[in-house]
Image (tube, rainbow, N blue to C red; front, side, top):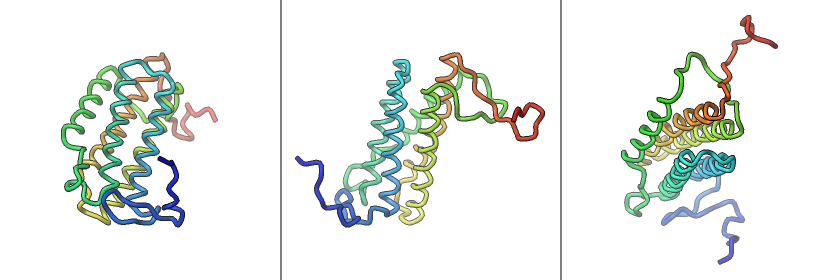
Length: 188
């Protein structure tokens, strides 16, 4: 099978079991951003996280393929691609709770910085927030889009924030607290 089909050369793409739409259609924007998020997680995994974290990130990547399949399908219920459910959201919440328990409480905003792994997870969190915004836009245009997918991305961005903090802590790197410009602690 060839990787190129030439069917998108005029700026359109086909949805799964659906019509052809413009490549800037809100549905394409949504699942394209989810694809970027998945790649960002792949990049984070390239920094050799501990085995448990790597397994969690791989599991999330599989979940994001499910999100993409649902978003690429005009009628996911009928096509069997509505794969994100309450159990998937509960798994993210469980991972948040377990990982957050090992962290000191936040007392201020922190900068998205630290180790390469932590910073890559912060970048992935930012992409996840963008995917969430794209999904909100799609949901406004097509209200039948599953809200569970939106909730999944919302929880995932929270988990990625927690995991970035965990990555720093496991490496002995302190989170960098935000300093309001003009505060006495501001060194600039």
